[in-house]
Image 1 (cartoon, rainbow, N blue to C red):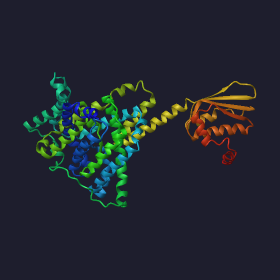
Image 2 (spheres, helix red, strand yellow):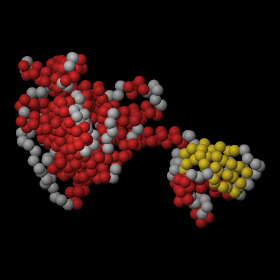
Image 3 (cartoon, one colour):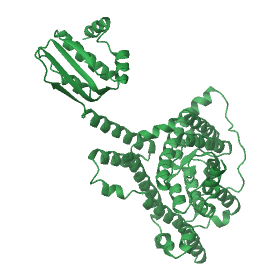
Image 4 (cartoon, helix red, strand yellow):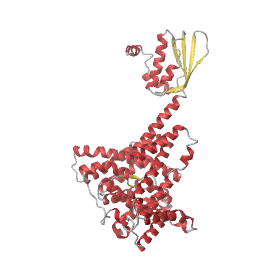
Length: 495
């Protein structure tokens, strides 16, 4: 236990503390923007980001991953806030956390194994595009100073690491923010700053039980929103955890992460914050700035609170151009550029799944919908591929008898092909169907086997089934009707 504590908290203290500072600075404008999207006071998003970052550092399963208030979650809150107000949002946030904890105990995190690599790649590329697109308003209808500062910021980010010793010691995004802020203040440049985004809170968050009636009516109001928030939050968190797993070469417990996200959201709702989840952009900033442990997430939350409450006047002077440069760096680093060249080698179906995920996410800004479409397409392509690998061979045997050998997987997608592979008009006294190289997966497959046997018997042919494996035998015994006369009569009567 002490070894895990040391690895998660003490193995990278300097890197985690510095990375946490960069993350905190980048979180501030985003938390304010997401609050505006949701239609609530900026302090709701800022308190949420502080609370979730700190709590998830202790309860989460993925060290180095940053969780806070997010745009995907904020979009789902708009109608609730508009129709019922902030208190109902806080109640929905608490219920969201409860549902996520329940999902962890139900081991729903295991469903991530059904998300193919092409869907993950599409998800990553779509998020990179969305991150870049989110910066465009800060680069539209602005003075030349903004473009110059953004370009200078990118130059610092990519060139500073090349400086011997110092370049590796301090995260270049932090240097970018500090340098551009100093330049903007000294020359009094007319550029948009963090202070222009909204008013920062000047008090610490306090425990706040949502002021809503505790009854069934309230539950019916918040449950649909909480369910949607829980699903989108867990989906984005699981996908981000998978990406961070790949970046760090480590594994994380997805069910544990579900519980951790739930506890963080419960805490957020009770401290006046909105629901949040893992953020791929901030997680990428953290990883690229040297953050690896739980300390980076904890430090980000503490830095965030201290800066907005105690250093507000200074913080408000940070030019948005500096943060835009950092986020453009994140977008460039997040996008899987290799996926473009890999399209030449990958199967068409893989490319379609990846591109469909990207297009749906970018057009709808709905991460859950994009991943759902990607998973659905991947499943359909997989089912089609497996169905084409099933064959039925008719073997040469003694006159008056026939043997068919079934090879492959028989399920809903290959059931029709299975039936069509038999010659029912061929006059034979007996037919043997050898299933030693086949596996029947579902009720549709068993129904197909019933139809084959019954059709042969209607032609006066004696049918025997041999070679079933134990799993196939079990499902056939349970759902098959070809050896149950009364069920066969019902089946024939239905036709």
